Length: 265
Ligand SMILES: [Zn+2]
Image (cartoon, rainbow, N blue to C red):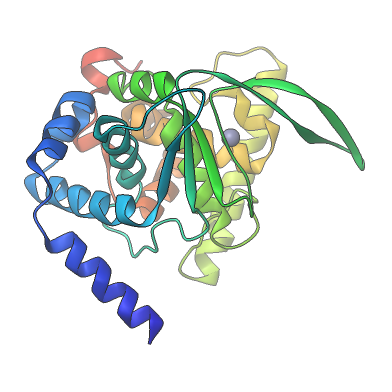
């Protein structure tokens, strides 16, 4: 009953017209928004309304949250939700936004049962069972304005949230069937090994080397590549591209600005 109530409330939110100022913010700050089909633009605005209704966003380090900040973050986060059956990042409650990079004090697992404590400079972060996601506003804005450089902080952090949905954070998001998991595991472990080998031998890679940290980071960086460098990714990593296309149920080559600002080789 609760779910029925929730899905009705969400459908109502999606159906109401979004403030025209929100559309203008997306048009101004997210160059790819203007390249989506009218149907996808409407779907994205609908998801943005649900997202901003359900998630708490607060400023830190003196930053005051404005509609521009809210909509620029939500618009990018909701790009990952288009066409899919979704639950709007169910683990996530709060988004904390700093004006720029911030220093985090925390414990980090460094393997073998050891934990390291110390300050770390960051642009964004989220964690399994944390319920929160932290972003630096200048990096969010830059990521949106440069849609083909292969990097996008918001897509990265929200890919982690998708990964957490099947409760493991192991680099495998919720897939439909057992067969899907088998193919995903085969393709991704081969691609992960290839990235690790290329990194060790100092080769230049299309996929961000940060992905070799662990399979969770691998999923986050291939998500960035999928949305920002889709043509190059399809050419160099066709099986990986196919897996992501099946999962995300969209083909960013149809709207990407990659060819204009970063031609693939
Ligand atoms: Zn990450």
